[in-house]
Image (tube, rainbow, N blue to C red; front, side):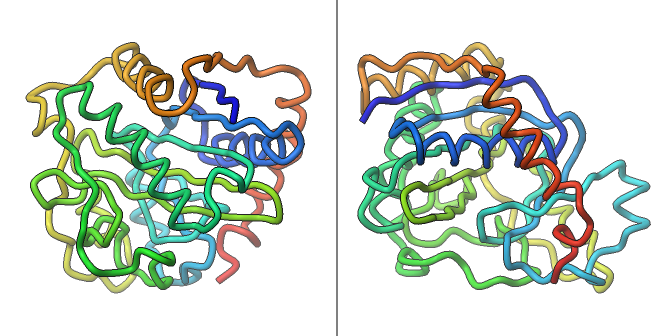
Amino acid sequence: MHWRFLATPPRSGAENMALDEALLRRAASSGEAVLRIYAWSAPTLSLGRNQPAHGEYDLGALASGGIDVVRRLTGGRAVLHHREITYSVTAPLTLGATLRDAYLRINEILVGALRSLGANAEISGRAGAGERAPLPSLAPCFEEPTEGELVLAGRKLVGSAQYREEVALLQHGSILVDDDQTDVASLLTTPVAPPPRPATLRAALGRVPGSAEVNGAFLGALREREDPRVEELAIDESLERAAATARDRYVDPAWTWRR
């Protein structure tokens, strides 16, 4: 499988989700896989595709905190995107025969990149979800690691979710630089106990890696583990047009608060 690498500057929640959806469509038609690294132009709470949310979040607290809200195409639970690195992989289903196969193959790339940065990440061997996404709930995504997730010293470092269509898949996730996830529980109309503190890159490295270093680590891991001929992807007019069309879904409150 031929891979492409794409690093994009910060975008809004709707723009980020729309570009990931456009890349999913591209994977279905081109047969290529893309690893994208990106950030967010404002703190954004992303909701899992089937997560209950309508009436469950304090809209005043979100507004006062300057926090946008978007619902992802993928499943899983709420993540606050702020001081973290977000990745997405879009690929034909031949990347993995099952969700689990593709999930573990992508995690091998992530492990390689994180270790090249100096973080001794590993894939959790805990018995748990593994075969399927966590059940939709109001518990924060980083509540605890399950089998197959990436951890540092047993604490969750990366939260990921995957969505599969007939011929292509989208997996994306959050790699924590600092801990903002303990704040997610306080944004609920009925607050719940914050999750245990997850692992962070700052704690592991004693510093915050720069964007050029991060991009180089992920590109290098992709070349080493998947495709030595990987090329960088340029966003052309066709991809921008597809993303602009997909954006309509993510700015629509009927999608964001559909359940």
